[in-house]
Image (spheres, rainbow, N blue to C red):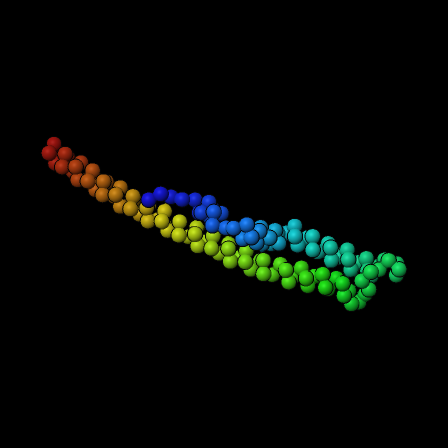
Length: 132
């Protein structure tokens, strides 16, 4: 039985749109993305609260434009993240199956080694008895 790299198997199964969904999931689930959204929100809200009245483009307290953009980001990211998570789940299944195959191979080899050790032990005992 050949041991195969589950990462290569997984990458070969994905088409371009699935690779994009996994990439988005990895990026959105990062501290960098959180900080980007956090500082964008702080900057947006601060500007529209503290800037001179004539420069504010999304008036306090409603922040309608900010809410609209935030909701659009969520609406577009949610299905991509879910697709990416499903694909990552498939990767975990491939990895688990590969681990199972490796464990079966190791179990078989261990059984063979135990048998050989038992045979060697028997031969050694026979030789010791012959010399006695």
